[in-house]
Image (cartoon, rainbow, N blue to C red; front, side, top):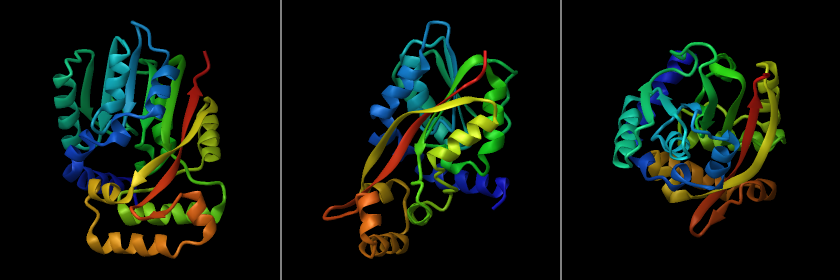
Length: 258
């Protein structure tokens, strides 16, 4: 699927469910969000850019930490609308949200101290141009901070993860392995390291409801999980009553040379 087709799929999927992400606990809070904000090292002069900002939770957390200016950019107009409403309701005047493409950022070189991406990079048609743009707009010494679901290094478990992700959400592209993110960051000129590994514990019914997964696909997911082998059940903590799962996540820091 080409980048334009992926973009269309993302807009279609997330335009319909934008309001759901305003109240999603996974996106609105969590230890990973707190650690991302801590890693950002916010000061009164910090300018930050959040890629794939969704309902705006990460951008708002950076703004609430005291940044001078935060911009959230997202491909989906409905998400930008939701984020704008949420930030206004919270009285945040140092954050703004814009419709835009992470592979063609409308900002000058060396504009931002921090560029973040949280639970959005698995929708990038190709992470290479997005990383290149992040590096371009970062100031020397600036930080690229990524939180995302990460695939296991084991190939069979990686395949299993991608299978259930795309059944739930057809706009899913890939949960990259942490080792792949480190290599991608290094190739983009960033000094990269994994700051945190954890997992997102998901209630199955809420997980599919948030994305409005069709009943036929939900049935396929339930069957896939029921027939999973012991290694798959352990890797993703597959549960039956109530049904649910856990997905590995990582916080990765890429530092631009000073």
